[in-house]
Image (tube, rainbow over the protein chains, first blue to last red):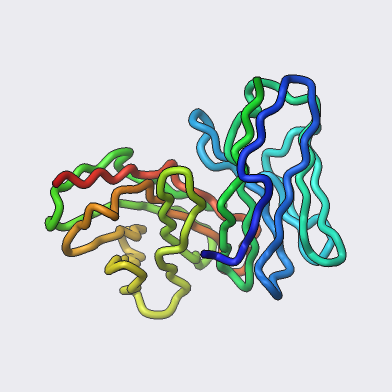
Length: 110
Length: 114
């Protein structure tokens, strides 16, 4: 158990809908990272927050957004969902140079 | 800029035989290197990391990796495979000063035959 928690574990929704994924980092970790893992694209970095501020952006679509709250938990918002957004979404938190991953949220868009 | 190449997409070994998962990296800076393991429908678990200390790094579950700067490699090994080692393994590189920019390899699927 990495200490990073993610909810929900599974999410099934329809195209065009909006969902929110939640991540709680390990105690004391200020950085949170979001990743998308799909069969065709592999593991892709989406975005990083550090102590409430956006720190780095990767291959994140404009339909996706994230935020980190004062208690350091983070939410990833996915809107106008398409079939191709079906994937595993991971968050990770870090101290120094090592990231610890949560168990992921499996999103299925029908 | 950095990148990582996992040389085998799939490796199959028999239980009790050695495991070798190959990884080459490219980095403009002094790199940090990691191996993560992902079991089916699970998150990524850190196996081991190299951050410019000893070049032979020991990790969990009997795995180890050797950093070879001259070969730009960071291969993962285990002397004797166990059935529970069957999983996907990811080699990751980051610039040691900036762990925002972690680059993941495409992964190697390890199959262990009884």
